[in-house]
Image (tube, rainbow, N blue to C red; front, top):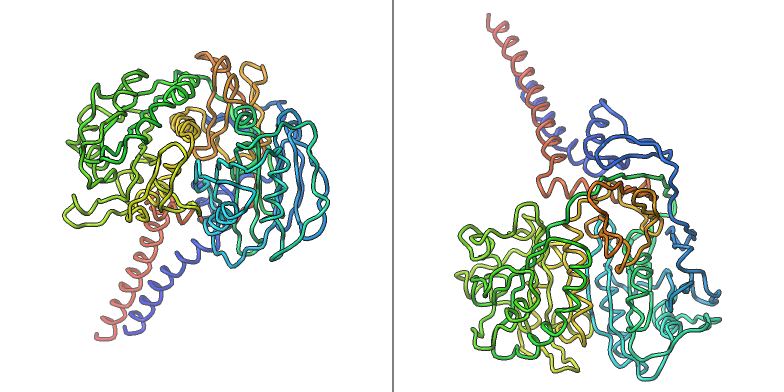
Length: 590
């Protein structure tokens, strides 16, 4: 009998260890259900050969082709570029391992290279170092964060959008070369020569810089930089975000398959937005700065043909400001101008959380609406005083009403010269100078909810509001892809007619929600057939492990099936051993 007890204990421990081993050793890419069936011997992963599929699950054969791309191997990474939009530009020499590129039809320039990590242990730390170096360089007047966001997926990837002002006039290629020499070499204090030369580019002192930083402890740190003038960014946006959105870099050992998703177009996506405005005494300029760019924000949302509603509360109340949720520009501008007579103890987190819990000011008004996404935008020039209203309890930045309900939080707060919460001063009167601006609660909540952060000292909030509008509509989009695409390979057609990639009269891909958003004349009429063809990486063990761990942390179907099945299996074996042991014990006593 003692042997049975010991064996039962061993089996129980073995079941626990099996769970750990499964979570850490499974590496074949597959849908969760197929993966689990494969583990149980009841199924198999999808084929490595090119496949086609529809979003509704019905197989389809198609002759559509993906977008034209070119591939390069940089270090341990595979780099895919849209060959119709950019071409390789020059061949830098010296301590450089990467590629340089220039736009074929736009004033864009950039590079992708393996860089010296400098002891950094994450993509965020690399991003902090990059911003510090840019802001310390004499040729650059300022480098301000428009948007800082973690890319979706398994890799440690930080996506940045920066406003950069230079002391003297430059071309996009000049600025790209400057950043390359400052931060793009593969050894410490490396030297890069034979830099690309500008060709028919406009010059300016105001620029937009798109950044992707991917950190991998084995393959190294990959830095992607894309530059354009500020005035030319509207035209360059689709090119730069189409390269540096976290999907076009993969392990050099990966294979690719072609996938087709087909949709029948439906009604407009429903997107709700909740603005949480600091109405303390120091916020006059910041409220005005947001209201001044409302036109751009509305243009981006309305251009998507979406059904949207916007509400405003303050950092000292969960009550909606008049007229409640609206899609009117004038009403929104009036609501944003919340005044400066509110409490000096600000907590956008506490009052937005309260508004979204049962009985709260937003929930009680029927928002967010059924089948609508919700984006929460917190505007404040100080740290968050959540504990002052919660009876001393701290806010859980990773487990909360936002993360539990897939509400994305966007932060317009003080960010210092390294892009982290801290003091800053803008050129238009905006500032964050209080001692508690280093508080990280709002910033961390934005990162953990899939949202983004922007500096309240930015010269122009329209760029960040455009991002919020696009991602809010993307979260509500019915056109979510079944695989993560290599976005530069995406080809889209509606009723057989090819659609361009742009935010005016075309489509845009949102890598955060893995969906398509259509704009302007390209918004499909109800009932039209949308065909999306793209490449996707087949092999990514890190992605699979992270997806499994995320499923388990979030209580997803994979974690439930695995935990329940292993527990039942262990319990059944122990029960059998107990019965056998009991019978033998009785026989022995007899």
